[in-house]
Image 1 (spheres, rainbow over the protein chains, first blue to last red):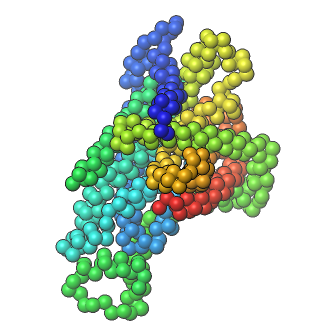
Image 2 (image 1 turned 30 degrees about the vertical axis):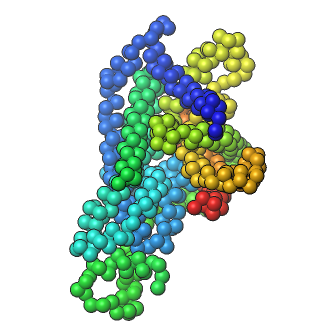
Image 3 (image 1 turned 90 degrees about the vertical axis):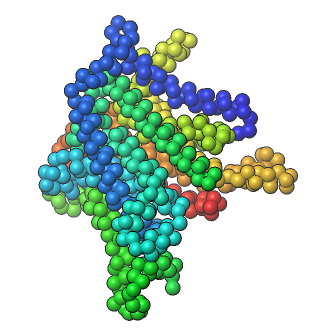
Length: 256
Length: 311
């Protein structure tokens, strides 16, 4: 769009569309009795007895998902790039399958498959960790694949191997540092997914942060909205900082 | 020698400088074939157990009655009456919001691309798009209740101007309301998936066309549209799948007033309805997978055509 005035009008209209509901949420969270406004909903956030435990659950599920995802996918995608480029389409296809299978369908099958699984898996959020790795696969694969395609992997690995490095060393000290921003990106997408996922958690009856937000919304709407806004803001800031860092790294590499 | 073995050799050969030269032997070849594929075993095992097995169980369950005997009753029921209508509603809602989201998202992406590549605007928009595309469920429902609900900010503002939308027949908790809310996460997703295609448009193509005497209209009709159409349609289909599987937003906003397939499955699974209809939920699930798989097959085909231009 060459016309500057038109472009800014378009951007302003979209800005309005996205900001008005946010602004309305803020106003809603500030509403108090008798048409007054106050910070009482925000003040009550820390008094919620179940907020911190459910947030804690979600955070450890997120940590587990990120760790397991990276443990499984970094070696797999590296291996495909290095040794089996012909199988790239197969791995990509499998990784994109969760886009075809709606979470509500997946959880249906999970209920059957792990019905008789040990308590450790079935009765605790461990099952969420295991399945969130699957839900995050499309993002994870795309991000890591792009990261690995951008470096000259065979040369790096060959150099490291000829200097006597073992495979684990190559993976941890050569490949991972070189695709650092892709690894961070994948980790962040996993985090965002876990902190927002509701379908699996609610049907598997796990008390995670999104499930708590929903149930609290029925009795204390103001608090629920305040907490949601807070979590959105945190997610936005994380992504924004990530894009600043990624941009700077690319720029400095360009100069060098 | 294939490219694959060359890469493999490049990666492995320096590792054993002292070892004897590799003698071509069939046993060795089988071993190296096994070793080569062993690296993929953890991934295949993992996806087999946590993705493949549940999906197979859904597919099998769709054809079973409560005692495990083979039946097509579930599937018949899944497409009849009430459930058949929910498929129609789901498909209609997804198609409508995918089209609206795709068009608006493409306009927004185009407007953003006019700015500096490393500028603040781009970073803000791309970060916001990443967050908002995942925005859903109760927070989104509340945001719109506070905006367009019966005492929402916009509703009250419009009433102040003399437009009482609720008297005019609007209601947030209906199909129309749901569509407006869905577009809120569809546009950001479109910005994310369509921006790379727009970035692939070369400025030289426009210059070349202009040098050959093409008008702006001709450039659009003969170059921009043919190049951008496949990725645009592909992105639209992705948006369709996204809306089709959305569960939390519809659940939080309408608590099932608007009949959508994911909501129906959800209530069948949580046993809110009759407990012996578990397999009906699986039949509905199978139906969903088939619909999205069809859409994705078209998506894959279009992507293939698109990559011809944008590589």
